[in-house]
Amino acid sequence: MDVNILHQYIELYMELGWNIIPAPLHSKHPIISWGEFQKRKVTEEEVKVWFQEPHNIALITGSISNDVFVIDFDNKSGLVEENVKWLQNQWDFLDWGTVPYSITPSGGRHYFFRSDELIKNTTKQIRPDVDTKGEGGIIILPPSELPNGVYRWVIEPNTENIPFISTEYIKKINIFYCIIIH
Image (tube, rainbow, N blue to C red; front, side):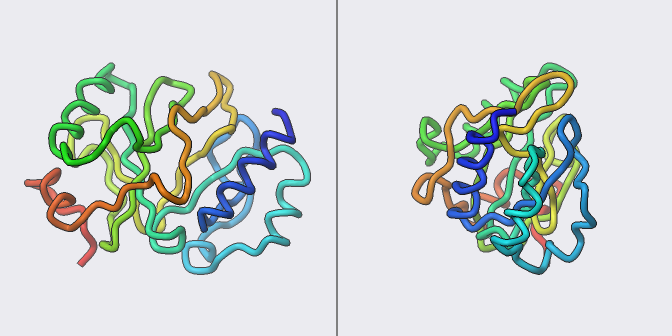
């Protein structure tokens, strides 16, 4: 892993107000106990110490990270394209050419959004191979590496392009399962 690129991404994520923690290279599992960071912002000093050596970057999702949530399209059944098209049809008000997303080493996709609703973490409740990473969830960010490849941005996030999704549209994608924490 190129340390300069790693530090450029860390700087971007901190600028976005994202709570990031380290995971070992080639792993999705944080190297620290991360429960407290679901409620407490990491400090710049902690980040400097953790990332002196190359590590993967894990994002704690939800209100602690400027209300970011992720829709995670797994590639286990080869349904990524079909599932992404389904979401694009549900949220057709978005300019999908600007929505930040990354590609996972397995060919999955992580789309990044914001909401003032507390979004639950779900597994396959919306559709097969579609998960949500919401309040207190965790997801791996580029340029992290797994044994089968590297996470990479297709559309990189910035302070302007992470779309806000209203309650009306959150509910639209989830007729049978509620993903909003009440």
